[in-house]
Image 1 (tube, rainbow, N blue to C red):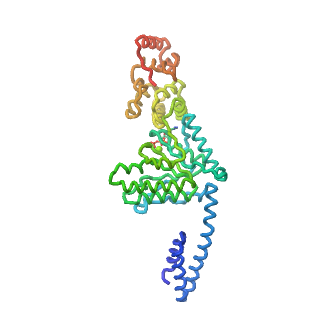
Image 2 (spheres, rainbow, N blue to C red):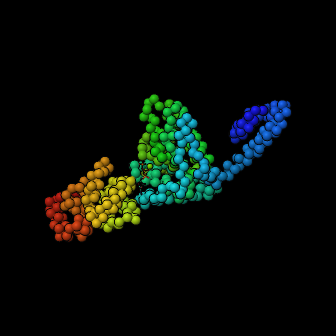
Length: 400
Ligand SMILES: Nc1ncnc2c1ncn2[C@@H]1O[C@H](COP(=O)(O)OP(=O)(O)OP(=O)(O)O)[C@@H](O)[C@H]1O
Ligand SMILES: [Mg+2]
């Protein structure tokens, strides 16, 4: 028989998912080859059919075992991410724990405790399963941009030592009818096969299909597929979804997640800690300067704070001994005009006397006169005069 090696390869591929029809046709082919006297080829096919029978028996118990141990196959760098069949665009990016982002997200104590308790569950999945208790394997995080949601997912993956399979929405969402649903299904099959955390970042992009009235049929198909995929994954592996627009998500999708965490903008203590971390390894700031930055960054996201810190670090490096702290903050505020507007930011670029009174009167900061003198580079008596004058005029606003 011509091209027998190709026929054999095709048969092997077809027998990866064996069914009786394929096996019957192959047996017919074996008989036909024997009849033609091509015994070598007939034997090779026979052998293939025999070994397939065995692997079908072995597979289920292997799969059941690995799932019980919260497993699946090991995801190694040689494994390629699945691709869109039409465009060949990858449906996911695989990030291994050693290349995940290393920073630790800083949250309020309450949020950190919630994350820790979820991690405890995820570390004890085997124990829960053995006790017949269904672990909560899926997490939805939502909140304003730049608050550390993606960072949190990387952090979790790193702590658990799992690779992240990060859905690539540009690859998943296709303009071809029905293809988006097929891509989603392929992505989940891939994630279900391996030991990994499936990360659905910017998850609302799928829900946004709803904005286009021509896409309603497609959206229904996509959401239905997503629901089925989330259901089937719910006992297999870890899933983290992230969105900035939780209201855009279909309520049925929303309900599928065992844990839901809102990541807020950082409060005072978290801002102070993020700032402290950002300046590690750089020219240190004084406590007074750090306190002022914590105050000024009220309403900032972690990402805004990072930009502010980076700006100061660059100015320090360029200006050296001529570095002017307050002037640098003013410039940064002017340069970041589209970021969060707040009274504190307004005051920082206004009159020094107003600013001094606000810093002094602020409940959390309550900056005393000697520290104000250090911040503004003035004598304590000048500060005292400013405060008295402002108080007598009822000036200054207590910015928060
Ligand atoms: N809570 C935080 N603790 C420490 N750093 C933070 C925090 N939030 C943000 N950052 C800093 O800001 C950067 C951006 O954060 P990240 O990408 O995780 O935000 P996000 O919530 O995913 O934003 P988006 O919704 O825009 O995708 C991080 O790399 C980190 O440096
Ligand atoms: Mg993000």
